[in-house]
Image 1 (spheres, rainbow, N blue to C red):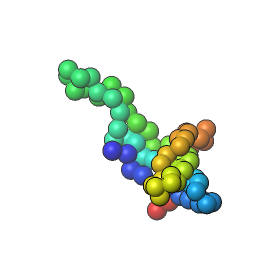
Image 2: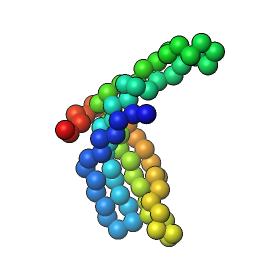
Image 3: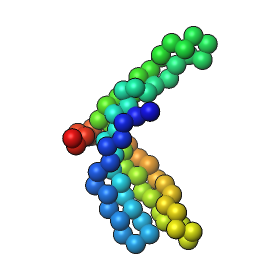
Image 4: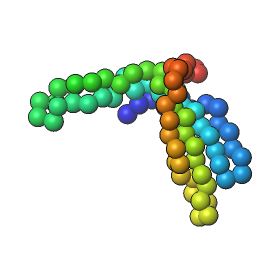
Length: 75
């Protein structure tokens, strides 16, 4: 699992924007037979999620994009 570092949460009525500075170094892909790691995730991945609040009151992710520039997680 990546380590999540959310920041910059902005809520306007039924729409929210959340930035996350993920550390995904413990993630990646592995060969299904050998279980050998093939890829590694990276740290400082800046993701921006847009959430919409449904009529049932539940927030759901509408879009998820990776920003061009890396981020720095807050302590």
